[in-house]
Length: 201
Image (cartoon, rainbow, N blue to C red; front, top):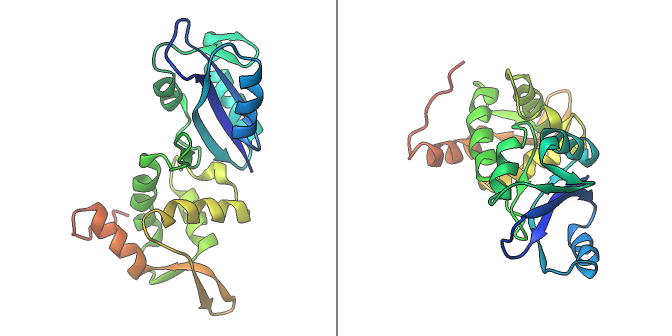
């Protein structure tokens, strides 16, 4: 796991140049960049990712026309909107600056697709839920992969809706991490204004 970030001037200025890169510790990277910068810098955006090298390359390729030099880009007066527009839908858990809150769209999308993935089951393992989510056409969760980090990403997003994975005993498997329908239904009801809408299969 690592982070892909955008660092730029703390105050808008022209030309508005920002740096896009990857780091294990974005705040330490900010301190290092600040030492050599004549203007105050800030973290404008960052996202945790299991393959930060791949996401960084994808973003830089999408923004190649705005590249000034190396990792520095001119993204206009609203760099954050540019990043949000080009950020592939398949990327997990975008984080807000500093607070490390997820992108608001990630949770609603995951809850909506979890209704489909859950089907009629009363309980499901974390790995099976992830597998079903990734089987949805044009699934944005494929980038998570299939390892333990993928299950942690899934848990991180669902946790913000008050849904925690439970240790559940499944026949032939034993006790493993999973989810139960009753926990999901509470979140689905909140999402739909109190009415649990049956999934469209």
